[in-house]
Image 1 (cartoon, one colour):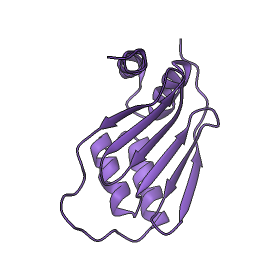
Image 2 (spheres, rainbow, N blue to C red):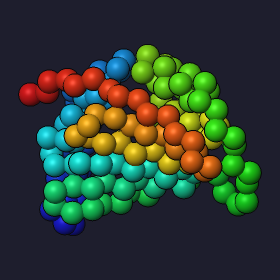
Image 3 (cartoon, rainbow, N blue to C red):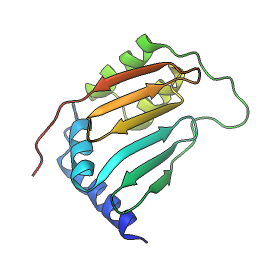
Image 4 (tube, one colour):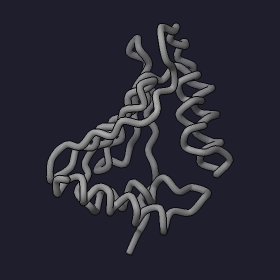
Amino acid sequence: MSEAIDNLTEAMKAAEVIRPRVGGFPYLAEVLRKAGVTRNVWSLPSGQSLFLTQEGPVVMQGEPLVTGVVDVPAFDEEALIGALRVDQAGESTFPEFLEASWRAGVVRYDVDLDARTVAYQGCNGEEYIEAYPAVTVV
């Protein structure tokens, strides 16, 4: 394994220990930011996550949300915001959040860890950007 992979893996393990069930994403993001991750780009429905880090880029291939040939859902900002609020309340798992985001027409989302924003994008250029709060982690 590379130093980039080792660093990312250790940061993700550390974040799992301190991340609260409700409102936990900012804690994960801050641990990753402190570990040198600058961006995290998710491609839905492939389940692929690209981490841009100071040690180099790392890709993680998760479980695809669909297989075969499927129609892309229309971008539905209201449904996306609903999925975000459910997740932020700790009422969904991460795979459930990804599935709900896909059903809301999200094909990609881009986390900017320095700006503390997440841009959710549809296939026709639609975009919803949400800021997340700064948190302190030790």
